[in-house]
Image (tube, rainbow, N blue to C red; front, top):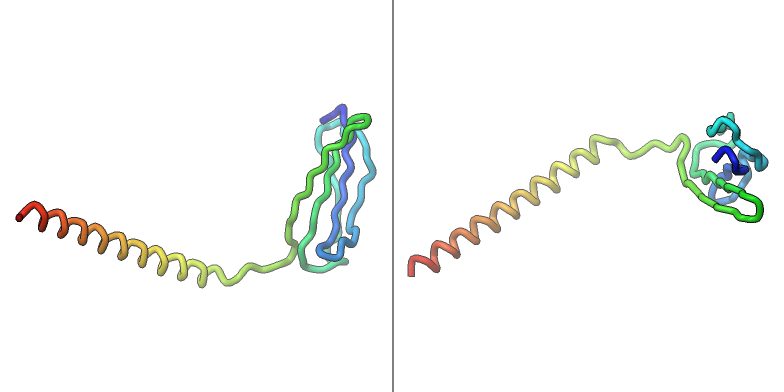
Length: 109
């Protein structure tokens, strides 16, 4: 990476408003730092645009991320997961019992 130029941009989606831009430059340390004040643009979905440039070749990457968005209450997710898991185990158990009954019934006759 130290021999390539890296261009970095962050946009707020879906509008595409530019929040941060760093012109293409060689990153001699192998890492880059940038300070972005998201409070100016508010909570929402953002997209990081990264371009690696080597002479006339470009490699583009886009990374979506969110800032300041709260997920749904984790307890409700946990409750749903437990209920669904319990139902799956119940169905599996009933299936195994039915298989066992069928197997025993066919071998008794």
